[in-house]
Length: 278
Image (cartoon, rainbow, N blue to C red):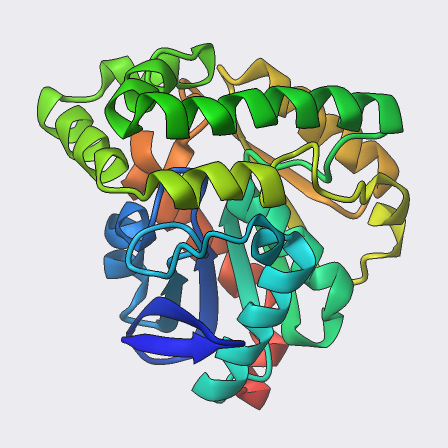
């Protein structure tokens, strides 16, 4: 369905019944990346997958200022209000995980738990943020100057996604076709507004989170295994789940295992919320 939030049209895929789960995809993804997971979970939960601004069937406005984490978090709050959702578990991958963490910091009353897959709280220092913003700006320009196909060719070869080469050719083709369907303007502005360098750092506030936080990382994704450990050092209540033999996109590489463990986590942490409804 299409819902409007603050004059932006968002595509929202809702399926199933039960306590709500909000799914936020990564950069170059959309709601389709969650299909195997939501098909598994919809028997017991209401699965709400959102095409983040600039992706999928949602609008891709030309104003990069419209893509900030604050603005998009406010949009998500509006979408939840329209759906009658007062509280949900947020499941976010990579950029979507950073967005979920940002949203929870702005609107904590809406969040029952955070399940963050290969995500971070941003960068710690101003120097790191400046350097990353400059790199993201170069990449954003590359998308517009060279076109979506050239960018996807480049994106598929970065080391972060090397483990996806082990997927079947059919699945790799499906992922590629999905990326090629994205809006160049939407992806470019997403880097400018929601890139790691543009995001506020939440490292100093991790200790203040008082909802269950589950950090998921693929064993072969050494950078995000380390980030998960560093986040847990900031708040020992965080739980880390490491997936053996997988890389950055766990839900793509091991969807059945990911879905099963998500369900185990849900029953473990949100029993009381389920009892009281939403």
